[in-house]
Image (cartoon, rainbow, N blue to C red):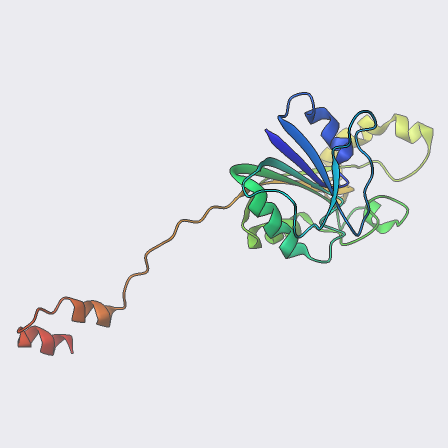
Length: 209
């Protein structure tokens, strides 16, 4: 599949490189660009987040990381993601949790921009032609530099998922692309009545009127 990371998604993209047909990282111009991967040719592009240099229906998977919470043009960005996703494509959004500690401390990667609750991000996706499928929570370890706490990170995640899910550092939501079929609108009752009148049938005409 073709995989796109939008924002600062490169730490997540390495695991896809061995199996995906194409892996690309697009970084918004206002945030700047980093060279990735460290070895070989670069696979990153500096671009306008609301005018991605990609063809319609060209991506099977899109990872939105450090993008949605930092953009000033939320709806245009999501519509652009909708455009490049294939009909069966999936979107994975990673945003800071409004109730978490990480979004309240500016020195953390998730301490900038607009945080979201799970309900808020789900509603935003629905309003922009995506259907939320699954929601996850992660990053329960506090934003500290203690080696002892960092070494216990796996334990923090297991306990937090069961006990403190509301206060996770980030919210992850997987969504699919909504495809609407056109519906024929029924004619108003009065128009239908006139349409059934045959020429010369005065009684039918009179009843219709």
